[in-house]
Length: 217
Image 1 (tube, rainbow, N blue to C red):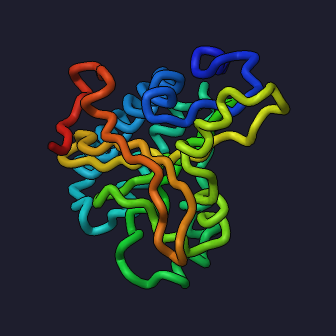
Image 2: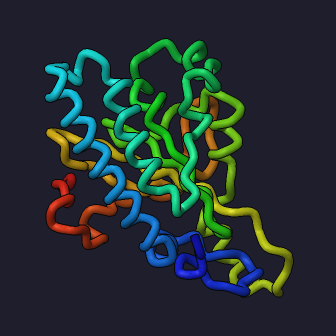
């Protein structure tokens, strides 16, 4: 996949990490993710109906089916399972946090990369980022606030900066995507994540009518 549509080519100074700039440059990718998740929740719902299963009896299976379908549809974008959300590779998270706060994380994650950004797609019923409970999550959350980076936008050209870290939080209800939030973390204090900004994308992006869900007020 050619990512030139999603970033300004030839820009070696600090990349603008403001919400508006990120949504603009990642718009094609964000639309593709929303479509993939919408198809994923439809597939999962159909499988559960066909087998007479109650999705609430095994939420991880529901989330995994959504991810599996979404990953197939996002292959042109280089989508991979996110090891930070894989229960086999992130056992520390499960052992460190025995509460139910992060039950939406395992089996639901995808990771996508562009030259300017790393986007982790996680299910989150409450719209919150998972606690900074592992070295991997802490490393992902550790980056300067966008306002601080804004001061460097007029700096002399230099080597390409490290990609920005973003989380795309989704949830669904009755086979419709009802949450689609883009979040930029900016560090952590202990296990508590510091959020740089948090944007509800559903009112900002235009989706095909058949896959548009409701959004929070």
